[in-house]
Length: 451
Image (cartoon, rainbow, N blue to C red; front, top):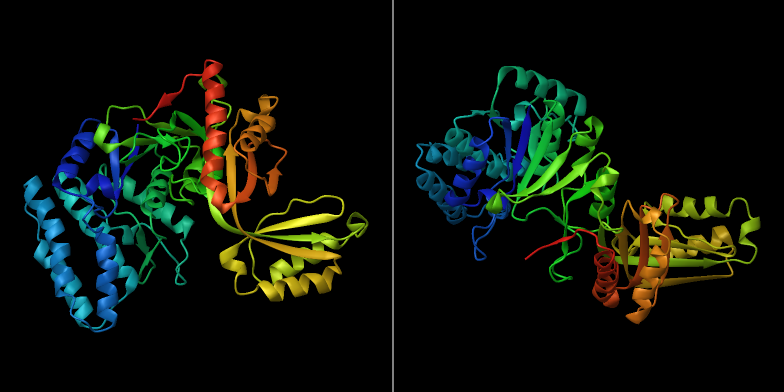
């Protein structure tokens, strides 16, 4: 059996956390390939090392002295090295970064990736594993796009040569050796890619929480833990604003149907949350798996009498959206109207132009615009088997005196999306959660609540 483990920044923030990670890896010889993030915050007053590297880069490009920032970075790694008791050439590694900056060769991706790189080298030395630089196995093309085929070939070759290895997350390189990074949080994606590439049987994602939660704990007090969730459910929740894995991180494991488990480095014996291609019916669970919320949407409402008789109406609308490079989230419609749900950050500088073009192309009777809409997504594989699920949600919102602005539901019944005013978003999430999960408890569902 082969297990790939990714450890997040909080799991590798200081020497104490490094020791916990080493205990986890050493207790199971199947944990063969380890993906580290850069050190996160060891305490609230700390800065993440990646944030320090961003500051270092900004100072370097403006020709400002970066010595103080480098000293802060050195202090973080020095504490780790001294605390775990290994010999490591930290000064030589930092000199390499310092000299690169001094020579004026300031590549942002190179600078930002050094947090994972250094953590990977230190962790490999501590575990006694081989260090495999991500630039040698995570492949990008010359335009900075990840090259899946080349990466998987490199990883397969790597696995045949290295029985155990530490591979830094977040970055890779093209054939010329130029460094490229994924978006922030990309170590999740690296872990998933490595799991695919080495043919892992399990991908463990270690963080500072004991699994996924059914709602944002900053909104809902002590939300239930999700024991098992399907790939599709996780994608829905992640895209809809839930703080789970990196949004793109599921695709490599989905392609090979590799199960994923989210576990807590600080409570390694607690059950985590399993992410599976399909969740067995006997797994049970509440009708609603989770609730997520995203703010910042605008809704364009277009009304036209006998719209349904105009065969090209929707094409005209979509042509305006495409011509203005807008991403359309949802498009609910009725016989004489259609609503366009669009992220406000894309629309804000084009509002007047888009509305004018929609009027010209559609000859609408009326066009109106609603700002500051939040989308609440209720996700659950079991909702399709439950009569009255929509009624439960809508009654909860009515009892909370929330006016629903948008309703979207697909035929799969995997999710129900409700648009409300941003000012009522948190209240809405709590109302739906309380109604759904108190209902599950009254029906005898086995739910585990967080402390």
